[in-house]
Image (cartoon, rainbow over all chains, first blue to last red):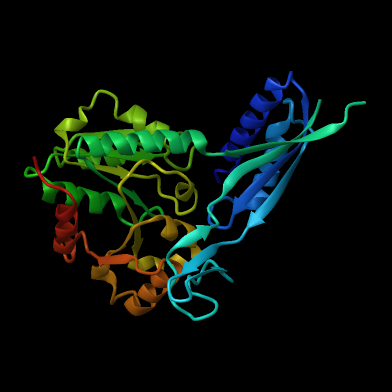
Length: 115
Length: 220
């Protein structure tokens, strides 16, 4: 379980940004979370709440947008969303699809700040 | 009353780790050190596999190893029998290695005096997948005693690795290991992945592993 250290990194990042804006309070953090990021959403939400205590982010919400895996099919020459990360095959033609286009994301995209 | 405002940020959470990993990869390449990391569940045979690997490469190749563990230095002590330089990284409560731990553990070592560096991660098939360590090759090991469905249970780590190594194949018959099913599962989560079958005990399969390593590294 490394979600707590991920939560701490998110808080550190958001705090730095809030302090750049004169110590403003952060109400929300928007996060993109890829299905292949290796991070479990529920564990992260749980860790986040605890880790926020006593920081500028106390009481803030972590808003997670889950990003499905998209692969490039060399046969169709198109990008497709995968139905499951247990089967890296093209949902249209059934070819193996090792090339990942998206799904590794673990990034903060926006902050809701009181200024 | 202040009005909340949405501020665009776009920053990778593991930016710091990725940055250090990138610097490490650059240093390894410049010094012509082939860096290989090993991940697996606890007890899959990483240390024994590494012990064999170090012994087979020495003295022709200049090899060294970093070994991650939560609390003990037992693995480092075992690997030191190979007479290769070995350093233990004790992570405390952290369940995976991070690039910074690797960078710190390398302090004082001249990479120009190395051909091959191995990094044994903490036994864990979940958390290490998120952290780039600057390695050139990531090996994921699974032993025949763990069952054929390991890749389906931990697709993310298999997806982050370059080569799958099925270990303890001397026990395959005893545990009725279905090699075809294991291959199907590996290819399902990581199409095209190279798979090796080894027994560190009997030495079976280690030749192919040595050939693969040597094709990617040259002794200086």
